[in-house]
Length: 432
Image 1 (cartoon, rainbow, N blue to C red):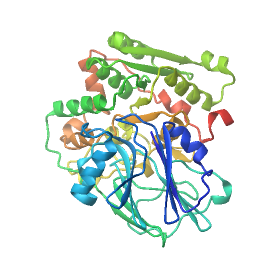
Image 2: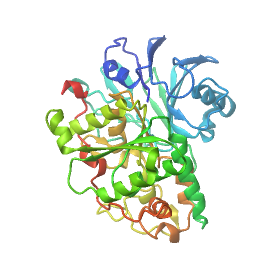
Image 3: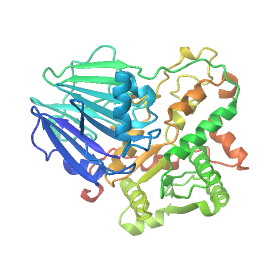
Image 4: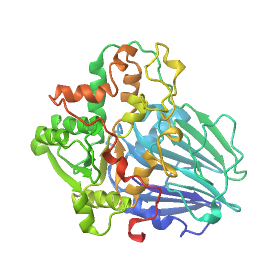
């Protein structure tokens, strides 16, 4: 996962006890003119590479993964630096991944988010001190509303005292003035709906799954179509994986899950996490389920958690819900794009935090990286380019059609899945 902190506060204790959990491989801090830049590494891709990296009078940090990196480099961050030197601020157009890329250039700090801001970054102030961190600091004395933002930025997450860096953006922070300049829409989406080749979408889906798979990955698998289709795709591509299913609440469709487990055969190592299992562990608050799921993933030797994240937000756009913006994709997609909840600040919220940040935060406590299959630039682009007729056939047509191709015709339409583990409490599990 990796975590980071950039601050003018020399106190290295603040939030680092949490950040180190997310980057257990190696920690490093450099001081630059009174600015302290800290990176905690969870090594997954390439060689162990302490960060930040100094190159060409700048410091560079990568949070997350770049999937299209040239493996002739020892680590994917060097691929990102190469593209930055080649294309300047437009370099993210040439990156495929789930990432936050940070460039410290003298007294300016540049943050480049992927199209969906899958790797969170929060800003807050405490007196004269400023902090950028991967995790929310919930000390009551630093809860204050952040002000002095430009008029053209997307609304910040509804977390008192914290500003979340927006998706698909280049955010420039002036260390001396504490002023922000925000350049939105780094990736220019093509909104033409002129494709009737659904096979391209299926190919992009398979590519999104394959590039995110890692040996001993653990899939959080409910009875919903998104995670079930991911499981079938992994098996079809001969990728061995672990899968965890929480059935602590009533309503999960075990028939559909059992059929997919049978379909996956020897490629899947599947475990049901039951109410009885959780009760035997100790007590039964919601956070216990989240803790045990991740402890089980670690017992498999996992570093990577795979999820069907993004299916609701990108493919389905929460259509059919009471608060959805639209139910049918219009002929002119520009009328509804970007639709609500596509970007991070309007995603479904649980407590004080949205769903993707919830899983990021909880995985940090266990040194795990979470990868959302549908937060994929090419998959999202191919889906947006489909003619409205195909988008309107049914909700989540990609996942449902993929399951049909695998002769799986039963799945859950409920919202149980991993929703049941969301909580608004984010202290480390062992401290509860």
